[in-house]
Image 1: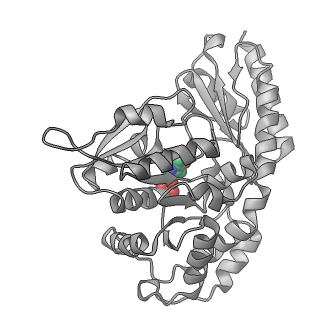
Image 2: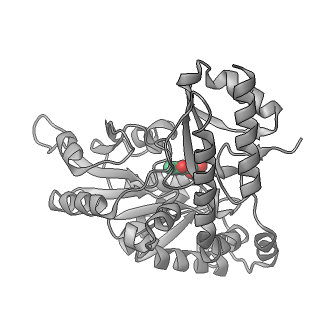
Length: 344
Ligand SMILES: *Cc1c(COP(=O)(O)O)cnc(C)c1O
């Protein structure tokens, strides 16, 4: 069976152009910094992030954790939103690797605001630890691809700097945020010290993420990457795909956003569904009103050729990407619609 796979944008496959570029990539030993394709990707990434330097790493998880590491010291605290990727999906690495306590702040929409952050800040001293870093996730995955307004980010970064606190951005989907706001990724990332973004996911590369920041931070980051076993040698084969992700695939993200909007609009007509209009490519679908749970619904949809994921027992998640067309989204919505009317 061929599936319409809306579980995540991680399922995208490299395009024919990427595969050609990978086959033809000029390579060398990147640990000696002799891989010309990796060097080109890192230079392009730094430019697009508006930072001095960038580092190519195997995964977004590694980029986040090295990013947090260079912004903190053991025994300090990191503030993040309560449903952040670093808190929920990275196996406690902030504690394990950076030796920091995560202090999380609950929000309705995944977006931290300075007022709420301020209450969570610890100023150090005889009885308090010190907040070293604020982590912002943009777009926010679990909240449904929500985007930080630029003025909210600017306030966080300005106030953080006044307090001597660093800001790390988990920009796994920063290019989706940029497309939604119609600004450059550099403009968004001007409001943080370090930023990570994924070349895989919606940008289609088979693997790889970038950490960008100052020369000093990225020089440190390069050492941590080696320590973690992320020195990848002839990784130009992967970087070649990443260059196409940045040069070509970022421009088509509005298409995914339009597909998500269409899907949300169609699904909001299903009785008992509660669908928040998406800002980017992630649709959250509340199904509590149907009396069914995700584990009732997901296997039945799968049997009909549609794959969705769940956030919790009464919230489904659909993510649009490169490998689903408008017709796929329409078909998926029809499948969901007829399944739900058949169970009632
Ligand atoms: C996917 C994702 C990551 C981690 O990326 P991996 O490459 O899967 O390790 C980090 N943050 C967010 C918000 C993500 O969606």
